[in-house]
Length: 481
Image 1: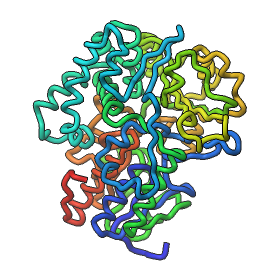
Image 2: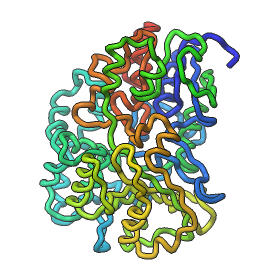
Image 3: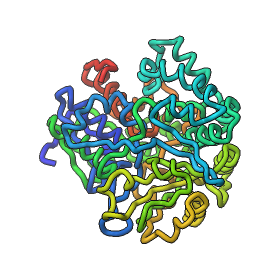
Image 4: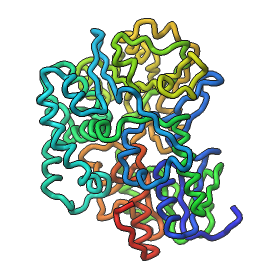
């Protein structure tokens, strides 16, 4: 770092750190982003984890929220080389009897495929799809008085109930299973209030924008954002793990793309005792156990739909998935997990040698669990794709401890920056008029531990930067990225 003074410094280069840096740099400030790893990206990194020539996504793989994000929509992604690929089918839900429910890009086609639940799906999602474009500013930011209160109230009537309650709208195994897989992205018991919101947003994202994968791996998203930031005049310092704010150059404001635990440790005495106490009371959620495979051929799913889907959910029926996710919250895991699987190489030839394939999958586990779930995950795949195990040439395993070691933000393997239940949906990391402010006027938090929470969308960083611009630099940036 040649300079000793900046207008703003961002600690961490995940999607939110990069979004914060870009938002600040767009206003003509001098901005430095510092990153502990040798490459930028946070959860958006890709590497040859198994064998040479097999490119795996280390963390995030499929990005339903990227194209939905107003922040991402404001970036000239294609001008900087980023290409999103839309799989033939957004997602499929595999059942042990060899059948599958399908999430198409088309709303109507998805409904038709649900048979006797066609009308139920049309009635459930149709009005939501009409209102969502106007509601996204309210849904993808901190709590505020809505610009469209009637539409938001209609959304809330469907989003606030538990996923278990909403499942009663459907009577077929296919529709209920598909719904379970969507809602289980909440990483909490499906009987929890507001878990329906997660299922709704993911279904809507598929119908509005698809569930795309970035060509060349998730690292391509990070590279695009960092290249754009640098093109605006921003600076990036990698290989700089910040243990104390005193290690940083001078600046008027620091934005922290970290979770509450790290913020309390790194900022130390610069935060008030009462604020540190509130940070230390923040609740982290379930962890994940992830496996990557190098395969001799594509997964031989019994259901054709699964062979054509970028994402495949495995866990059988709604009841099976609900039971598993509920057990996780009680620190009980079983040998039949709900598995989220992505097969990027089916649609992106850059991921593996010709004729070979990469596969990425994970399941939820109790926070910090030390149980090896490799066999359990592989058995779930084998049930719906006989012969899968015979195709494995190499594998790479990451349990919660390794995941946290790789990225300190993933406390106990929690990839969402804290549990996103009704009590922490908008009060992340603390209940505040502006959750991005801390007790220190020059320190802000911009990670997924702030609204709107986890996902590759950049909106946490964008909103935190807007708040800092308003408070510190007296620059008002309206929500119109």
